[in-house]
Image 1 (cartoon, rainbow, N blue to C red):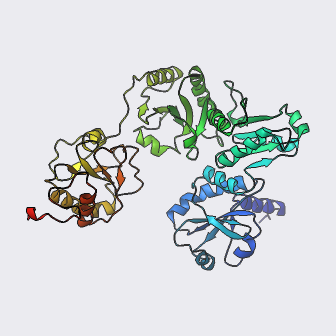
Image 2 (cartoon, rainbow, N blue to C red):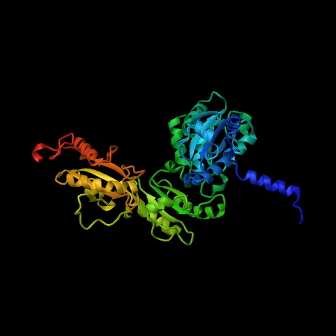
Image 3 (cartoon, rainbow, N blue to C red):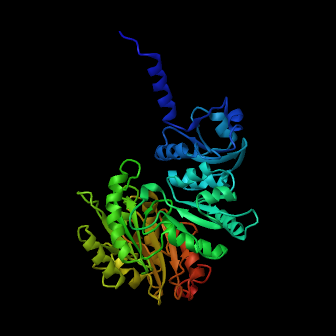
Length: 490
């Protein structure tokens, strides 16, 4: 059998090592190795953990980016099923647990996003200054060639008032954007900048509809620079991701398709250019555009009741300033997109509402709420309403159901009190009701329908009774303010 050449074996070995930049540490080497890193994010995990498996590819993607940063940030993983001592020392009780170390010492728990982009942004803000000072022409060029939006400042001296405000801008937004600056006049002159702040968009998103750089022309004001940055950083139609959602203003029109600048930049820009051609026609009007990946935003598409196109064409949806949803039902084309946006801005479109049918009857003590009758039942200003947001598959919700029904039966004669429930997986939930788990309960009092109170009490019938009796806008007929049944009702 022929032997494999040594240089090929070495190449294979290097490829295997380079395929994952995440550092693996153990009980034996954790203390000594972690001290070698300026800043490190450590993932304590278990191989069988579903959340850990979901995090793994995002952690690896973030590691490959941060390892080449200046200064670099190490991403480390520790298997707590085998490395029990170090996990116990750091109080790991659930998986995955993420902690930030600085100079070998535990600095803080990591409570940021769990996607690659989000991890990169948070950890960059933890390492080094919010704006890196660039000393050479090569360093400036390297930042101009980053695969992300970069904000660069070119200043005549360390005493520049614009530099002072620029650093404040970087301090405020370093988790969202990459900042760097130069105070070398010779370096600045090579790029034809002096006392300038510039947004440099990545080359992968270059297009004929707008410049790849945008220069700030206002005064040295933090507020004005921040407004300018948010208004211009994403251009006519930027890429919306799960970690930059808050950067896109509404009214917002989004084209969803297979956005992938790593594997298919050409195909991604093919559709983006068509969106931008339409967006260009609406410049100066109060509407914003974005592209987004159908894979990354599948939950959002579900909110819109939309299906991914079989032919790969974008599907389009919009939200207005009040967060109402609108769907373009026609097949994607530039003409159809322009007509959709025109009607959207003119108020000619019917908002989309994800809702189950309104129940034909409401015979049970617990009233069934769907999106289409939410205003009628929950926002009725003549009633105080306790509403449960549940999921049909939720075990805790099933356990609560008979107690909730008993509560509603006990309060059936209270004309000003409504006990209600809503399947939050099948209906749009108004944004003032923040539902992150099931069941979630809110009390919506008369006169304060836009400011409901989250119920944080016990889940027994008596707990609910005491809360409602105490919190109700008007005294209950059958119970005193302590939740005790009135003698007259005995």
